[in-house]
Length: 282
Image 1 (cartoon, rainbow, N blue to C red):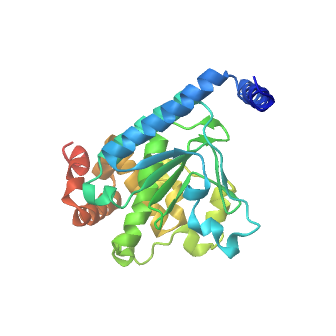
Image 2: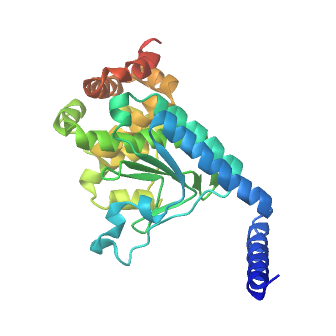
Image 3: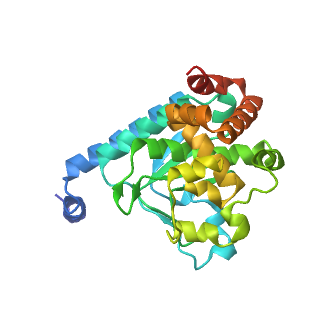
């Protein structure tokens, strides 16, 4: 063996050993690690081929929200760490691919990539999700301070963030939405411009659900304004249709706002009809 080849073998050995030490510190061996990388690549490739949407675990340069790169964001904490559990990643990809499948083709074409992260920090604040219409990307946090979040929450966040993209692209009529609530109705954010930040920092009093239902809101988060109110409706429509069916049968304002969203979504594409039929059929 030449000195050059010997040097290469020694270098490769120590490189392999270094990787082995790193991945073992995370609880699995190098062979498992290499298999997991291959599995993720093959799985993502298969989903992208069948759905036309790419899936990614963690933020990388090419999927980082464009808004984070602006000069106004310099010095602001923004981060999205990958989900560590391989089994959890596969489960989340499967869960979210099912949500993609309920979308009409016209809407799928607007969605390019779904990014899962463990925790998401957006502009220095912990966030459940965000979106980037330019990249056609959705970003979904799958863990909270108390641990792994339920599947329904992940699915709801997917539709919550997607609905903002649709709201922007298809010019959702906010005035009509407010007219349903009445001229005397005010969101908490109308009265306090810092209310949204207070909610994200968990510095607000959260009342019983019944209080919000009577106000025509499906969650306390809806108090942060028209967009999040609308987002929360959409999230529930797609992830908890039984609960939405129950609410529209009992609360007139919720029924009106549900009908308003249904009309908006069907104006985008009639392919959304099966999702609303799950609620209406009850």
